[in-house]
Structure formats: structure tokens, C-alpha cells
Image 1 (cartoon, rainbow over the protein chains, first blue to last red):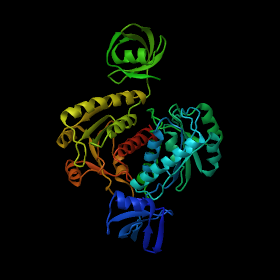
Image 2: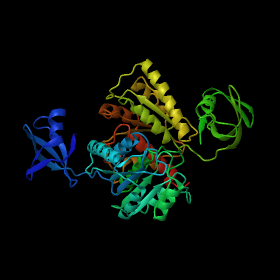
Image 3: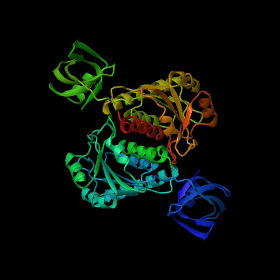
Image 4: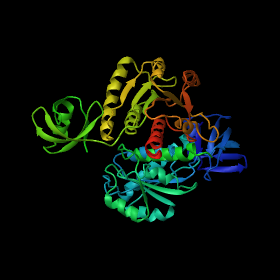
Length: 253
Length: 253
């Protein structure tokens, strides 16, 4: 069912809401919906409701809120992906798929081996476009949270963020197994629900040794993702899938 | 390091090999390699060797095989992805990423809700192109096995293959949790190493109920992949990542 993250709206009473802007436009011009049609509406507080169209006017739609959606759609831990600027349009894929797979927010930063050099103006433009991709993917995958997308000017900006997280993890292909079990599996046994985790991935050429050392000196953990070499844009999808499996499917709740 | 799946070669003695064809062309014309440069060479029996260029001639390269590569690169179970024909070029992504993530082979079939209608000629052409993508991704991800790509003419062709597998799994978003743990997690506790598994995914609109019922009547298991709705092309990547984590990273070997 169609789903919208609300921006321009007015609560008329506890059960009735008037919606304008992009959502109004999409409902009337793109999908040409009618009275009685149903959608999910997601509020900024991450509550979502099944809603029915009561009335369509020239500039707004009025919905009746039918019931609150109860299924939990968000990962039990908040994962921020931090990716070294990759080539071409690969951030599009990382953001679309990362959103589907439950990332809480997605950061990109200029890594030592990043090929693209984006100035402040370009970063802002890109960030806007990527935010739209994240919004669309959040709606499509039926989430209640829309990931924040942030493109950083420097690696120092990334280091400054470390203090906001309970854990910082560096994904590095040269991480070895210990005692027969991978560091990733060992690390995940330590994670508590609602933890905030920053996970750092390199661009096409990988992270430089110097970068990894700086991250480790700032208390990051290092993990590998198995014996095959994953492309830069595939690694975060692997990581998020594993977190979902481990915390949403494998553990008995 | 550059890696090649060998096709046209001649073993001169136990440690020396003469290579022609595409590999010769890539080494001399694309990468412009020189004497002493090293690559990995993978034989059709899935053994791989570190090799050094001894001599470059007009039509062939001669390598010395230095040592056998020992690290296991392949998943401990053989997973065949079967995907309902998706729209546009999405099979490209499924094959590239599915190969990186360790699929043993990849099948696509006309599912009830598949939009594209591809005739036999188109299927053959597509299959050739997709096989090249699988080969390139196998080299890039440093595998020793190159997935076979097969595009089927009918769903019956898929059903006829069920007997070749130890398990057939249907990924269906409406699969529910049982006893607090997902069917996927429960199912994976049953898997033995070296099992052959066929895993079926629907196209954009999902599998039809009729299809799912036919698969179940043919002894397939049904599993879901968590609370968020994944796009058609994302679901197999999630599944393969989870298998890798469960069998390569989490279990102590």
C-alpha cells in the first residue's frame, strides 16, 4: 500500500488530517486516488497510521486516521553507515538499498582513496538528491523512520562524530578470524538493543592503513565480512542484512 | 590482484602453462602487464594458483604456477538463486551482487507477475551477457567457482529442477514468525554443510499465491526476510549475506 512521510499537514482533530504539498500532488496528480482509497501516513514522531481519504479539494486532501500501525519496522539498534565517497552514482545504490535494509542514517566522507573530489556546493546538491532517494526508499520499504543523509567535508568531521555513538566499527577486508569465529560474530554478541553504532566502509580502493589506524586509535572495533572480496557498495548491504538477521530473525524476542 | 578463470590454455608441464584467448588479450592489451607480473589463475576444477609471467609472445603468455591458493572462497553450501524475471536491467545487479555474495548458480524464470516477456532468442542473448557479468564478478570477488546463469522458458522448467536439490526455499514476504524466531533462522539450523539449496524469489509484484502453493505442494519451505519490504533485487542479496554470516562467520569451524 502507498505510504507517505508527512511534511505539510494540519491536524483538524485527533482523527482527521488535512494534507497539502507533495503528498497532495502525488495522490491527486500521479496516482489519481479517490475518496475511500487508503494509504499509510507516517508522522515525524515515527508513528504511522492507516488512513482513508474523506475528501479531495483543489489544494488539499482530508484523511480519516483509521488505526495505528503496530508492527515494528525499525532495527532494534540504530546503525549509521559512513561510506568513503565512492565513484559515479554508487551512493544512489548505497542509500536506496541501505534504507531498505534499515540504516538509521547514512554519511559519506572523503576517504584517502576516494576518487571524486566534491566541493561544498556539489556536496549540498548531492545531499538534496540523495535525501529524496532515502525518502522514497523509506516509503517503499514501509519504514517509520527516514534516514538522514549527510555528506561531510572532511574526515575530521567524521572523527568528531565518534563521541555520539556507543560503538564505532571499521569494516576492513584484512580483518582476520580469531578462535575460529569472526570478529563480527563476536562483536555482535556484545551489542545491546537500542545501541547507536557507526559503521565505516572504504571506497573502491578500500580504507588506507593510516585511516584504519586513526579510527582504531579512536576506539573503533575492526571486523571483516567473509572470504570473498565485496565491492565497496555491496559491503554495507551485507552488514545491514546480517544485523537484521541477527537481531530481528535469529534472536527469540 | 588480477584474477582469471582460464579457458584457452595448455599445460606445458606441472608448473608451466601457456595461455591464449581473452586472458592473453586482457593481460597484454588492457592491463599491459610485463614479465614477472603476478596474477591468480583459476582452473575449471576450481583450483586456483598464484602465477608469474615468464614470457609474453605475439599470441600467448607463459606463466609459472607459484603456489596453490589455500583459503576457501566458496560458501559451504551450494545456493542456487531462482528469480522471477524482473524489470529492466535488474538481473544485471542480481547476478553481479549475487556472484560477489557467493551464489553457486543463478536462474531466472517467467513468474506470474513478471512484466518482461522474453522469447527464446532474447533469452539466449541475455544469458550470454549475464554469464559475462557473472564471470567478471567471480574474478573481481576472488572466487574459485563461476556461477552458471540460466534463463528458463517456463515455470515448469523450474519445477523440473526441484529434484536436483536437498532443499527448496520460497522467500515470501507474508511468511510469519513462529515461536518468536523466524522460519529462516529455524530453517538454517537444519542445513548441513555441502547441502544443495534452491531459493526462489518473486519479481517486483512478488510471487502469486498460486505459485507459492505449487512450490509448497512440491515440498518447498517458506521463509520471510524481516519487517521491511525489500525490493525484488535486494531480497537475494539479504539471503546470501545471511547465509555467509551464519556459515562462514558465526559458526566456529
